[in-house]
Image 1 (cartoon, helix red, strand yellow):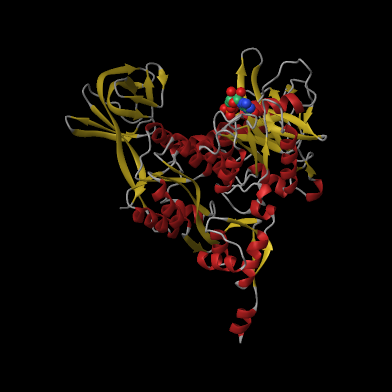
Image 2 (cartoon, protein in one colour):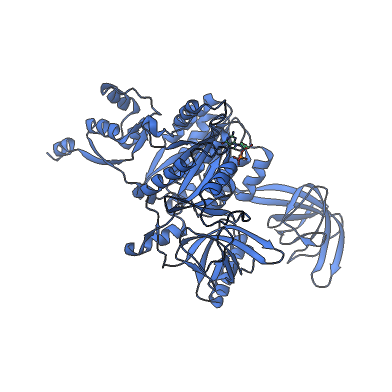
Length: 604
Ligand code: GDP
């Protein structure tokens, strides 16, 4: 009896406003073929990757025994995807009645030369308020434009750098991304990367189709390319607003601002102006005459003159504040960029800042952080690897395995991506799936690593290699790269990772060798070995073994490394360096030093 009831009752399911046939199939646990057939019987021809709207999806779902309701945007946003930025958490905890609308924060991404800078300048010239005519245009990394008496904050360092810096520090500052695509050039590799960044950060996108004044502009073709990448233009019943603009002729700029406000109005862009003051560093520099100047974007609360601010391990009392036009201000509320004087050190862009009670509290906080930084340095890096993935799932840090997939040819990319995306696993918290953030053909590049670093993703390559700069960046940022030449092995590893079966092994890798040329005695330090690096590099924080006539005389950590008089992180082949160890100083000329790192690698 109970069985019967179950079979006739429609199961309820929440679906987004737009989804692909494949996503619908997954959501209602049907095969994509079934979905395609049902769509066909309803007169809709669609392939597996095609986007369908909610109404269509709901009809299909109903035929398969599901009652679909529309998934609200804020629920979508509150889904655990990596860490929620500190300031968003804070706003979420504010009393709802204190929350007020704030200006949307917009960032511009897109392929090089597609017109990002020109567009930012054009908007600034036409729509910026309270900038004195003929005044010097200040570039503090952000400005505010106005449209229909509403403000929009633009982060005006175009390109990935600023956005990625924010994201990799968990700030995710922007509320809307403008994806710039030149109408005469179309979707290019960096357009796709930018799209992947925006999607991974779950920030809504408005497309600015730039350079429409160019004679060879082909907006229709570009719209088709956008649709192929999942950005269906609104005029084709999709939900991506595509605004044709010519920054050169200043055409379409108002429409673009209108579109930004429209998108912004669909998401709740709120903050408590009277709440705790928190925000993100946009830029920081040291000015020879004025000291440290930092641009801060306030995200909650109101920053005031005389406030004590802490950013990372820098702090100070604000002794001057200016708006983006260089005008002195006393206070900056949510979504306002302010350039400030008074910090004792240059803060890092993308880092969160907060206001504390007084300088003593600031000093305590900074001391605590400095301690923690030191401790973090001494413990192995917590980089995300396929092997450590399952622990991260268990700890609730991540709920999906994010991948960037590169392959030699398009033909191999498609089957790889579809088989990876189909993989899932369940644990006590629910389902863990694979989210392929970005795909491409060709070798793994620096920008793949940048995307992976900021998105906490793993890079997988099939029949490709990582180029030199990419390898170096990956090592520096702790991004894990996996290379394969058999598809089966790739999917097998991902499957094992999802089930926590891929236990890492600690392995040693020799990264360099050196020879002791001379031994010095310095009263303050004891003995120092003057060496020349003969192979690879010596790296501070790595481990070393000292051999004398092939016999091991010491093994330990390389704690201090100098080049001439400076402390350095690494010294490469052909260069000389000084080594001083805490618990060993019995160096002899001609000793051979082997430098190695310990890393977690896949169990074979
Ligand atoms: P970015 O690298 O994306 O910041 O691109 P830029 O803003 O530097 O623009 C690249 C080139 O395209 C420059 O030579 C601009 O003058 C030109 N450009 C930008 N926008 C337009 C436009 O709307 N129309 C035309 N004809 N040229 C443009």
